[in-house]
Amino acid sequence: MPSPRPPSAAPRLRELMARALSGSSGPAPVLDDGADAISLRALAERSWIDAPEDAVLGRNLLLVTKRALSAAAALCSLDGVASRLVIVPPDLGAADLASVIDDAEAQAIIHDAVDGVGIDTHLPTYRVRLDAEGSGPGFVEAGHSTEWCLFTSGTTGPPKMVAHSLAGLIDAIPLGGVRDETPTRWATYYDIRRFGGLQMLLRALVGGHTLDLMSPGESLSHFLTRIADVGVTHVAGTPTHWRSALTTREIAAITPRYVRLSGEVADQSVLDRLSEQFPTAAIGHAYASTEAGVGFEVTDGLEGFPAAFLARPGAVEMRIQEDTLRIRSPRIAERYLGVGHADVAEPDGFVDTGDIIDRRGDRLYFMGRANGVINVGGLKVHPEEVEAVINRCPGVRMSRVKGRANPITGAIVAADVILADPTPALGDQAREKREQILQHCRASLAAFKVPASVKFIDSLPTSPAGKLDRRAT
Figure 1 (tube, rainbow, N blue to C red):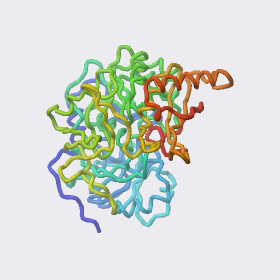
Figure 2 (tube, helix red, strand yellow):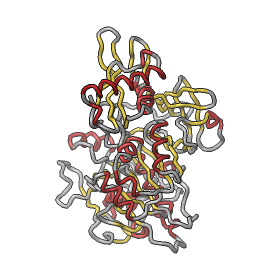
Figure 3 (tube, rainbow, N blue to C red):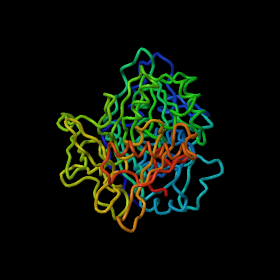
């Protein structure tokens, strides 16, 4: 049987939530997924797990839930109680769960299915109950330093399980206690069972804020209407989320004070479109990864980030080495779960993020992932660099650039493009639009980076994390 993690003096989640809620006189903050709304106070004070205490105390637990709200209730109930919490994303296939159970050394499964967890497993299973005001008094915390385990997005490779401490996860988050005159109400397109969404969940829980979540199967238009009706003030998502939202009529109904992007490169086109849509909102794009944690936020409205950030004092140290961004901070993950993985950090404590950086004057720009380069006759092409140029072309909504096999050069650059107005995607108009895009690329890119083909399509594949899926053909 795996040994429980040692006790820790670090504050537990429910303690931080109680601290954030103390002295609050405004509306009671809640987590709301459109089907249920649960107060943060109830989450902090009650257990939502239908299980005896000795079944979860000091155990390694898998959270396999259909609803994000169920996962949130389980996390609030079990931090400081369980030894390890493995937050399983909703898209993980049942066939992959056996290896996850082994790698996580899981001892029980926490789920929210009325008719059982729905998988064949020898492990005991216990249910999250959202159909009552908590299943009973909160579990007695044994002071365990609970390990929070997340899956990487797997956008460019197979996902891995990454272990964090709660202290590292919340290090970049302002704790509750300072109240705005107008209460903060967050909404997020992210799923809270992945790193970006978990950051939004923790920001709400330890800050004492309401958070609106998308329900399973809820359309983007319906979600925007719902959060507009409740007066959302802060909204977060990936650039891909935002590009999709900006095409809806319902986007006009929300008037946030703050718009946040993270999870992908935020190019100038999406930043400019958000500024036009929300002229009074503060717009920030943050850099974070599942392994490196939260790095920094950029709020000047420009893509990339100032080179001065590399020398900025604080908890996060950064450097550029072999063209990739390296980060060292108390926010980085502790380790990977399972065998066969290298350490998260290098011997000097820096994490190689794998994100290629290009310096132009006093600013640094994200060029793409080191493992996503297209090799054109020995010359490197970063898909994100080409996409940023195409996305700036008038009439383009978004694009995805990929390599296509070629017997002479090894690969050529191909672009799939969604137009803001799909009408020109036919006949002579399509040829004219394609040539306009290519001329735009030729003016900004070296010849070998200019797409050899441009295909107009209606939609692009996205990953469950809300990013462009670069593995899809």
